[in-house]
Structure formats: C-alpha cells, structure tokens
Length: 230
Image (cartoon, rainbow, N blue to C red):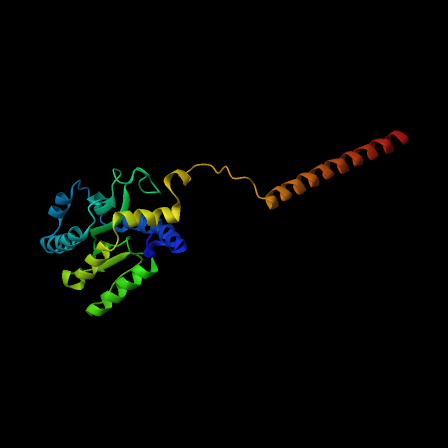
C-alpha cells in the first residue's frame, strides 16, 4: 500500500463521516428522476447545463478507467462498479462504491469530492493548490459549491480526481472497514462475547436478586411462627 493510504485512523474518520455526507447529499440535492446523465443534463437551464457539462468533461478526462459514471442519489455520480468491487458500498452493498458526484441544486451547483475528504495529506494538497489560483474555495466536508463555472479551479479538481485511482481507493476503504469477508453485515446481530465487566455486573445483579428472595422467605417464615405461637 502506498504512503498516501497508510493511516487507518484517517481512513476511519473518512468513512464514519462519509455516511453522513452521502445522507446529506441525497436529502439536499435536487432529486432528479432522470435515469441517464444525458437526460439529467437536458433538464437543466442552459447556463447550468453548460457549467455542469464543463466540470463533467474535466472529471471524465481524469477519471481512472475502472470508475464509471451514472445517475446516483438523483445526481451525476462517479463510482466503483460492482464488476470491479462486488462488495459495493459498505452501508448498502446493493449500491456501487461512491467516489465523486456532480449536482445542480436549488441555490448553487456542487461537486462532491468524497475521494479527497478525510485523508489529510490529499486534502491539504488540494486546498494548497486551490489557494494558489487565487479563487475562493467554498467547500464543506466534501462539497465544493459554485454558482458559475469561473468560481472553480478546474485544473485542481482534475488533479485531485486523477490522484486517486481505483486500486488505491479500494485499498483506502479496506484499510478502514476491513475486507468484505471481515465486515459485519448491516443490521446483523453481534456475536461478540460479553466483556468481563459486563459478566461481573450480571452476576452481582443475580446475587442481589437471590439474596432478596432468601430474605423475603425468612421474613415470611418468621411471620408464620409468630402467628402459630399466638
């Protein structure tokens, strides 16, 4: 594994937050019912179609051959297809593993760069390169917001996409979540053995309950004896 993808802690941060990022993407993006990228673009106003198309061209020109483009979460998505990574997205294995996204929202357009978020060296290189262009970076966790094409540093976006080939991205995932065979299935019950402290607390509770029953039985016997003496 290359130096860029060695830090498991950083990987864990990436994927623990990636879930929230994806949920935010699916809830905030304008949910298009388009089933193809071409249909999605055709639905956009001409100015937005031109801007989104320009960013799309940059992404496709720098995208590793094993990624695919398609409609995901109601927007244009870039992902590792099941033919390359059968395990799919760890939160929902029916979905391919998300890598990047491109969307037209109500008040702005957005590029989702899940491929750089969470890995500090990659993120820092991206921000440093962007700063050198003199353009303002309006970026959240992984979302770069823009209102016109001129707001974007397209070369920097292209370099970031190109810097994370599919093989490295999969290594990144498995460093954080383990190989597919090692992962716990969503919703599966845990088979882990209770900890010693948990077992000790359970025994103590059981002992107190038993002691309470013994005390109660003694009290009942005492009451019966006193009544018999009378």
